[in-house]
Image (cartoon, rainbow, N blue to C red):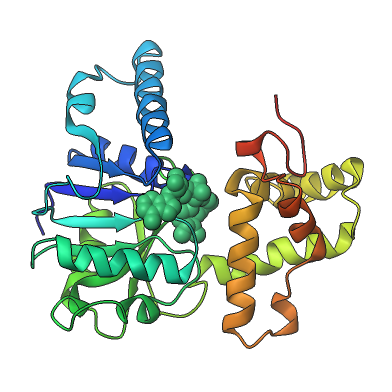
Length: 286
Ligand code: NAI
């Protein structure tokens, strides 16, 4: 499999990390977002990250990386890209609307991928023409995408099986740990992880008492062996993103009680306490 030019749509937490990783993997990358401000911020943050790596002696030079990463509007993007990775807001109707546009804009050979955390690929495929459906799959990266090795490769009902295997090998050869997944809500990690968040939320109850949060986080981190505690991780992921994933997995499994969202998640979202990105979530950040 040969990938040279890719487009990443959505320049938020995930899209900017995915664009940075693909650029570091040697590809020519175009980053797109509906918000011009977000797009410029993402580019500047990625440049800063490379400059810091150079200053710490972890990267020889950043010029060729900077030259290979550009920003653009969707309409002005080169339609001959090999792969488009969608990483916009977790909303099925908005994602389907975008896929309809991508199908019309990009060349017949272009592979389309979604970084959705929870929606079945089958539902996004409904927006595509019959000839594009074999070229749609899920590529689910984890946060931060430049560091986390796992990439879930999700085959939809019409996805070309050989394409999934080719991409699996492509990632495997580039220091990622791909995993082939069934097209079911939450795939592997986000399905298993619902309980990693849900049980701790039920333990702390409705008031996010900081000392109790810290206690639960430290037990799971230091004794459980997880890299981060559940509240630290929700703050990193974004409580809004995590809450919408919880809701869509819960709905997709017929509102099964074990997947029920916790009222505290909604309360924090309503108060715009999204976690690190808004400086306040379960914890406060400077
Ligand atoms: P985010 O809120 O940080 O970024 C989303 C970006 O998409 C924003 O910059 C927004 O302006 C842009 N956007 C929204 N609608 C758009 C459109 N129609 N066209 C172009 N740009 C548009 O969200 P985040 O966290 O990066 O999540 C993106 C996707 O990745 C979601 O599907 C989410 O479920 C998934 N995901 C998130 C993870 C996380 O830890 N935050 C982990 C793995 C997957």
